[in-house]
Image (cartoon, rainbow, N blue to C red; front, side, top):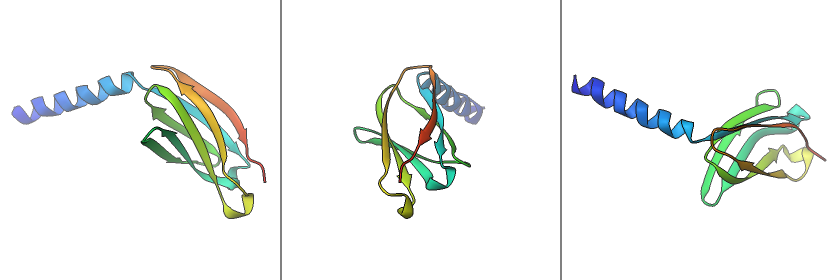
Length: 99
């Protein structure tokens, strides 16, 4: 019984935290140029791997800097700033990487 109560409390805490996050998604083009996207805010960071160029992540509200890590032959990483708002979903559309 105590274990069930602990599990319910932990699930509730995580659900509450997710409600206060925002989300972003987009597509990297060309898809083979970038395999990972890193979101940085202060000392916080979140890294995701793109799936055929598509990516998405849940982030806490605030100003984030997205870094699109590129493969060696594609040159320098591309950066984009995005403001995440609580409970909002942001579609960044297509992010074109340059050589």
